[in-house]
Structure formats: C-alpha cells, structure tokens
Image (cartoon, rainbow, N blue to C red; front, side, top):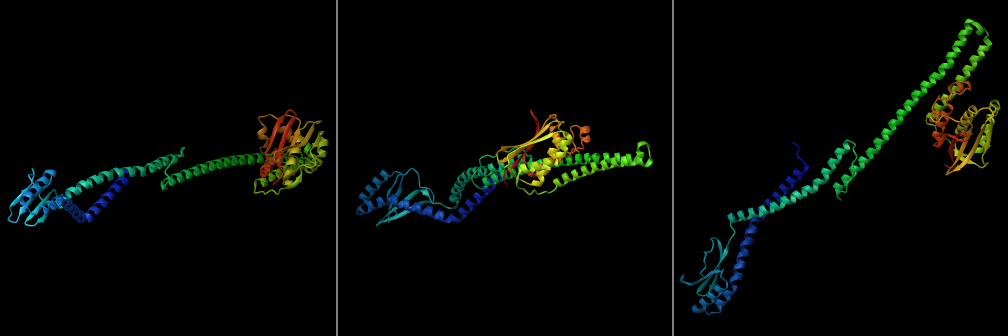
Length: 440
C-alpha cells in the first residue's frame, strides 16, 4: 500500500518530539524533584515566619503564646500547625478538619522550651508521585506536539502534493498553470520544475515544427526527383526514336543531317535542364552569399541587354524606371540569377506587342524591386509556380523551351537572401516583387 508523504512527515515529527521529551525527563528528573521540594520548604518558612516572630516576642508566656497562636490560626484557617513542649505536651493545635497528607512537608521552629511544628498540605514529590505528574505533563506536551506536527506536516506537504499533481499533468503534456508558492527551497523547486516544463514544451514544439519541415522537404525532394526523372526521360526517349529511325532508314529518317540536327536540339534542351537542376542542388547546399553594396540600376540594365535579342524575337518591350542611386546590400551573383530568371519568365509569358516594366519602390529598410508584365494568372496556381517543373501551360511552356525550374531557382536564391518576395495579380498585370536590404 502506498504511504503518502503527509503521514510520513507527521509520524517522523511525532516520534522525534517523543524522543526529545523522554530524554529531557530522564536527564532532569532528580533536579526537578529537588527543586520542587525546596520550593515547598521555602514556601512553608515564608508562611509561618510571622507567627514565629510574634511567638518570640511573647516572652514564652503560655497564655500569651496560646492567644497569638489562636489569632494566627483564625486569620489563616488553611494552615496546620501545633506548639509542643519539651515533655511532649501540646500547648496549641489547630482544629483542622483534615489531617495533613502522608509525606507532606513539615518544618520545626525552636521556641526555647517549646517547638513550633508547621505542616504543609502539599505532599513532597516522591518517585510514584513524579511518574503520575510526569505522565500528565508529557500527555499535555504530546497533545500540543501532535497538533504542531500535523500543522508542520501539512505545511510541508501541500506544495509537494501540488507539485506531484502538476507533474502528473506534465507527464501527459497537459497545460499547467503555475500558482503562487512559498518563498523557500520548495518554492524554488516548484518554479524550476515549471520553468523546465515550459522549456520542454518549447523544445517539443520546435522539434515538431522541424519534423514537419523535414517531412515537407522530403516530400518536395521526392516530387523534385520524380519530376526531374520525367523531364530527363522525355528528350532521351525522343532522341532514341529518331536515331532508331535513322539506323533503320525508315521514311524521312533517311535524311540523317536533318534528324541529327533534331537530336542535337533535344540534347541541348536536356543539357539546359541538367544545368538548372544543378543550380537548385547547389543552392540547397551550404551556400554562403557574399553580399556587397551594388547599384540595382546597373544590374538591371546589364540583364536587359543580355535579353535584347529575345525581346526583339518575341516582339515585346522592356521599360526600366528606377533612380540612378538605388543601392542595395546583396550578393551580385545571386541577384543576377534572380533577375535573369524573372525577366526570362516575363518575356516568355508576354504576348507580342506587350510591355514589361521594371521599377523600384522605397520601403522601410529596403528597396523593392518590381517586374510587371501584362497578363493574368489563375489565383489557384499562383503559389505552385515556385514548385520545380510546374508549368501553368505545359504545352506552350515546352514549345517556348521552358523547363519549369526558373521560379524554383528564384525561390531558392531569395530564401538564401532571407528576402521577402511575392507574385500576384494586379490591375496592370502580373507583378513580381522582392525587398532587397539597403545595409547589412
């Protein structure tokens, strides 16, 4: 059977108090008896000192001594005494209703030929009397001690029981509200346990979040490799069909130069896909950006010149509107990678005659770089555009040579920056924005 802490503390405290009282009684027994009897004798002397002095002034006259004794007896009716002569004759004796108890205190006062015998109604304290008196005293002491022990045990066990109850809730990871505790070691223990539990819950939440993030990453990785294998398999299968046709000299496949050129185009597309996959893999590693102060306008102008031939071929226009002194603190290599993919994506998704606007806006602590191209994207697929190999229009994207990795590379790169970015529909078209810090 489980024995709780309250009865243990109560019993141990009670036994300790019993032991202390018993030791005290054993050590001070003789001193207590001697002190008690001496006090009785002193009290007896003090009670009869007046009578003794009056009798000495009587000149030992019998009649006068009897009168003095009678007057004293009338005044102090509870006193018991007698005056005896040398021949054992009684000169005076109090007419007390009760005889003095056995073992009472008796004092003799010499009065020349007479003797004053004074008796006390309180008995002297012998062994038997002491046992009775001590038993009564110890009983009274232990009653008080038991009450004190119960109070002490209760005060000691209340915070411990509360802590045990809270610990049971903590074991189940249930909410536990700390309450005001005592300002001692038990109170410190209570606070420390609750602080440890709060840290444990925070750690569990962090682990759960990390586990969820890891599962999400594993799922994204599984999807990435599945999509990558599909993207790499398609041109390989197409090139194999073409080469098998050329080997068999079937129909148009006899024109080897034409179909070898087609195979080269397929391999070029596959090479481009592989390089973009490698970009994402490299960005997923422990890549450390090297930020520096750069002019955003210079970077944008450089990237726009690179795409000038494609802009002409697609029949679109790029307009750049930003101050010459727009400075940000980023890695220039990574920023060029972001701009390259964003501008390429905007060009490929703008109809002939359309205009792409590149501009900046001032925000708190950053410069917001914006790329706006005409058109509209279904709101349901907007969040998925940053997934690897996702294409809003798969057939048109393949025709334009899009791999579906451009925006995925943009997201990976900006995650390394720790920059805020977004893609949304506006009244003027599809807007991509990113906030670039102006200082480290």
